[in-house]
Image (cartoon, rainbow, N blue to C red; front, side):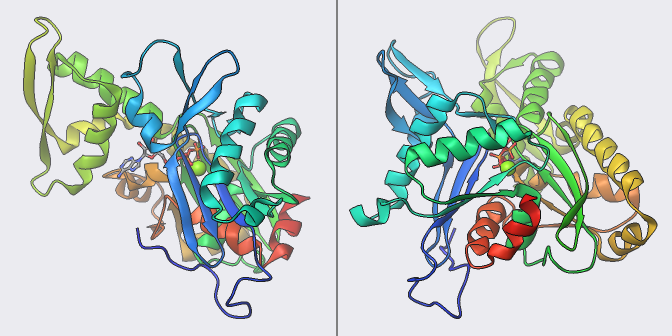
Length: 343
Ligand SMILES: Nc1ncnc2c1ncn2[C@@H]1O[C@H](COP(=O)(O)OP(=O)(O)OP(=O)(O)O)[C@@H](O)[C@H]1O
Ligand SMILES: [Mg+2]
């Protein structure tokens, strides 16, 4: 993707607005600089080795090496369901990220950071993230709910006196949030999202086509199905019975069907969120529609599924994988947004 400066205007050289907007996701980590645009977009995984769990490779390279490394190297994912599970590995990962996104040594001197956190995260989970980032070398860390950052990154104003609803379908969690005028009206999440869809497709291939594929192939099929013009694609794997190489043709409708249980879960939390809202807010959302982002919103048939279920328009963000980091970077110049939503 082209690097695109997120914030222009008042501070073109970036003297006032140093720092980074960070989306530390279960599947991907994205870092955005308010003037340089996206400076990092890589899988949230690292390979560590030795007793001290020293990181050997981080990000894309680490992901490609999974399942191909010598003994002694372990793949670590520092986040699960959008939150930190192990402080130590999260800190190591953030240190590696900081090194990658800074070009000069002085840029590494405690830069500011606005970091996205799921709206449904607990106080303990918030503290863990702030602490890990602080210990990794960031100074002045601000946390912002990811739905708010994503909305801001898509050009909505979270401080406007009008209700909005967003759906974020990530790797580990799907979250639906309604907000208005600096306050969250409702938020619900389910811990099944993109990665669960991959798993469902993996199982479907084995059960319905007797085809064994790796997890990376299953994910690739899920992503590729969107671009296939004739609605079907060829998948390579091994025959479950004989172990021999095998090719099958998979129809797009089969993919949609295989992941229906996951998408049904998202329909349910969206319905529950709408029930929570005051009537005036529902009116706003009926008129403006719902904004969707996160990698899972790119899934073929996803928009149609939600529109059919609710009858209001659904808009998928222009850059659904990076808008949370872009919005977090914008918060560096609009600190009032993070302030309003951090209470
Ligand atoms: N074109 C696509 N079609 C379907 N799914 C996709 C597509 N592109 C990416 N994904 C899926 O999106 C998910 C990753 O999305 P994203 O980067 O928004 O998650 P994350 O922010 O890291 O996770 P979380 O928000 O749960 O912490 C993965 O499960 C990936 O397979
Ligand atoms: Mg996310």
